[in-house]
Length: 459
Image (tube, rainbow, N blue to C red; front, side, top):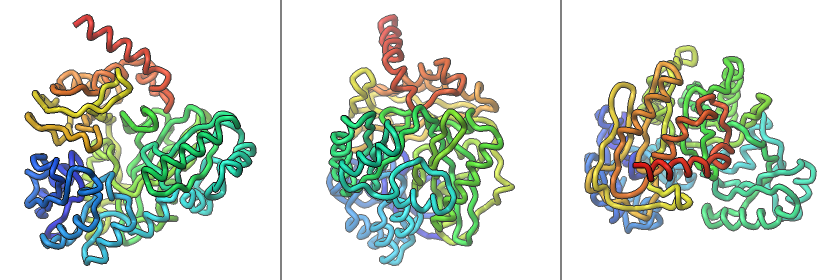
């Protein structure tokens, strides 16, 4: 087992990793930017090293500084968390080249699955259903127009190296296609340094269903059930739950087997997520694989009782999976709400500030993952997510009621958050029936914000 791990991240995921390491008697080295000198993960780690200025490019994305910190402190492994360099093949290879273990899949697998167009081809060869689309990268808008005519509109133009909804544009007819293509390419270059694009038929009003997989170095691959991630804003997930009301036991089994097949086709190792869209007819299609731990991994932890970060570390150390597929048990229902420092009433504008008062919810079946503490100042340089509230109930209705109660207890003062919006979603008839799709928030946002404004006036 590892003696010391460098945590190449910040915020709540860095705190999450440090806690798992501490329980495993593994020392941790936190890295931080000059803006994060007082951050919680810095205080909780065994040691800490400043790796650069406040901009991510100067610190959390600075491979040379991160590797120097790891080597100087005698680390034998690096955990990348999510975001930043977590899906960067070059970083994974450099970690290995420096004689350390990268806690995640190999750089080759990342590269293979990181190109969405290449991943589509691999899945097609493996017999995993994929969304109808281009056979490979699309070079020009004119070529995209020809493919779109064959597929039929609407279509989705997507960056091969994309993620988090970036480098993705919709075109409903030929008049929109060229502008959408060029905008997607420009965003892909700006965000990922790679302008390669491909085309997919847009599946209207789907469910976004993802399966958590674990794969060890001995060829064992299992899935841990699904998460419904259909509550989204501009392709950014906002709330997740497990299990999904949309899946029958048979469909769950089929999709789970497809997820395992996808991981095997990629020769995958460690924790990952296979993502599907599910249409109104019960047809599912592979869209991508995330080669890292997910933001929403606590949802799966709550229903399976497994510590996924611990499993990641065990797998990276060469140990076998701690259970077989037959031993996986999903019990109860879990929901996660991402708490972002943003103002929904003003187009979700990020809103850094100082934590003037903080009360986190607790009680039976409630978990809060956060790096906030009273007096902490949010930096404008990083993602606006500041906490995750996760609940578990014996039934879905119990979980919904528990989440309502948890959000009522949560108090973060000093900047606006999206918690009131999520609270209102928990009362929406479509959410309660579990029939919501990825277009839910787009359709209902105006009404929800009006309700929130009315409630504020009445207080």
